[in-house]
Length: 89
Image (cartoon, rainbow, N blue to C red):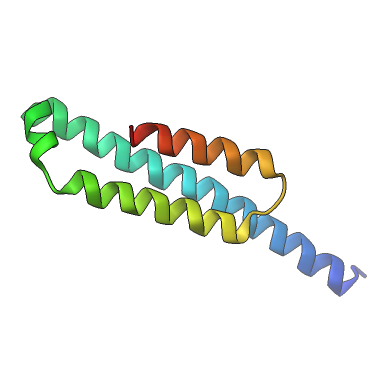
């Protein structure tokens, strides 16, 4: 029989991994949406849109959610944050 504490740690780690993966998917989908809008309407449309600021806030919020639940290994968090914030430049 599996030790209950071990099972809970396994589930906790698995959920942390899923949150990390979903964070990547969410931030990339936002970027894909922006890219498609730019292709369809032009860069000027996107530059004037209030959505960019809102998307940037959402991306930062997503990174913070991931930080709350995925603590180890730290380099994964750094990589995600660098990648997501690079899109904000």
